[in-house]
Image (cartoon, rainbow, N blue to C red; front, side, top):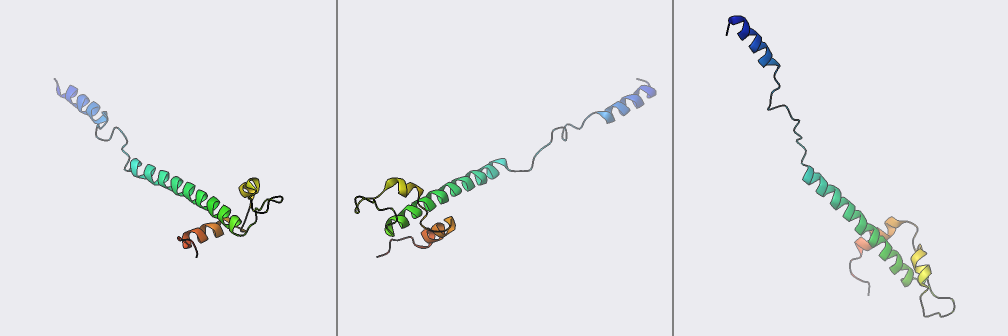
Length: 103
């Protein structure tokens, strides 16, 4: 090869892509973030279930869903739609604060 060809080959070698930096590498741990998202969703689902259970428990305790005909029975459609406290966070805070039943 002549000197001119070597200069041209060096110029073309400089244009070659760097294989170490050719593909973009992410430094984010996708498994960890996916686990955080899944656990957050599960925690939200458990909180919603706990609010619903506490709402029904409080409605039964305060007798808000008594059957109109049979006073000792429970109206199940009322139990599904009742709002025994003003806000959902009241149910959640009561349920998290009172882990054992009151005597």
